[in-house]
Structure formats: C-alpha cells, structure tokens
Length: 239
Image (cartoon, rainbow, N blue to C red; front, side, top):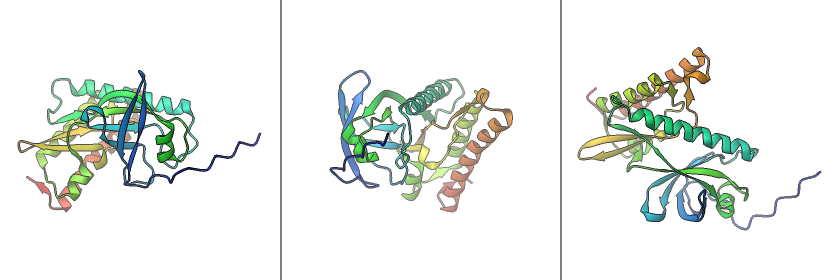
C-alpha cells in the first residue's frame, strides 16, 4: 500500500541555536513544560534544558537524531535503555574508593516522551520520541569553556585521565570522549568535571579483545586531544 502523504507543517522547523518551548510526557504520569537550548548542530539528539519546573538544570537525551528518519520505536527504546544502563553503571564505578573526587558522572533523573508539538518542532513530524532527563551540575561544556578563554591545568587532565582509566579497569569504555561530552565548573578556585553521553559506551565482555582495546585507546586519545587543544590555545598551565 502507498503510505498516506504527511500533512503540511503548520509552523517552520526550529533552527540550530533557537530556543524551543514545549512539553514532555513523564513516565509516571503528567507533563513537564520546558525550554530547550538547541545545540548548533545539523544532527543532534541531546539538548540543554534551560527552564524546567523547580528551576532544575537538566539535560535531555532523545533516542532520535535530527535528520535520521528511519528509526523504529523498538530500536529507540532499546538505545535509551542501553544508555541508562551504562550511565548507572558508570555512576556506581565513580562512587568506589579511588575514583578522582574532581570528576563525577551525570545522574539519570527520569524517562520522558516528547509531546507531538515538541517532536514536530525538532524533527519535522509528530511521531512520539522517547528520551530521558539528567540532572546536571553547574558548568559549561569544555569546548564552550575553551572558546571563552577558560584555563585548565595538567593536574586537571590527570584527574580526567584517571577517571577514564578507572572506568576501563572496571570494564567500561566511554566510546566518545570529546569536549562536548565533559562539563567543567569552577568553584572556590577549583575545577570539577562531569562526564556525559554514555550512549556509545561499551562493556569489556561485549566485544572481542582487540575491539575492546581499540575503544579503550580511543578514550585516552580523546583526553589527549583535548589537552592539546588547550595547550595550542595557550590555556594550559603546569605543563
């Protein structure tokens, strides 16, 4: 059968960088009115929530990327469940003795679903899109921090490197270490980091030894690349 044509949009698709107002359906019932800060990217599945009830600072991760149309509800649900599993496991690892106190893991808050209007503003259609919310600490992504002239020390990078190594020792590799997935906050002259986006994370038993080693090495190379970017910008101290 020929699929029915999609009805014409009533309003233009939200542009990169534009704030998006809408509602989320909560898994336990009810809705939450929010304002999203759209990432300035062509293909995104993560958004900062600039306004939510109670003034909470939150991070919304959906199971669908802008520009990726053919995604089944079952695959979206599986992707979200897998990421939340990795997130919770990473937080458990971070609470063990020896994990650097300067680094923490983003905290899962609740499962949600985008309202039809919000889904249409972001993705161009009103198909239900599941997601989850994380409560965030204060801070900015490292790429934004770098552009704003923020400085890091070699000791900061040692803490970050140690955090990823501790995850590796426990059998988990992040899989996508980049400055957009690390928040940094300054308080009382000290910096604290929060690691985000565990969607690509891998467990040691899920891959063959060589593939696991490649992902683990990619994590360490990601930290090194961030260090080099700060060094090249003259924003690295103690080197």
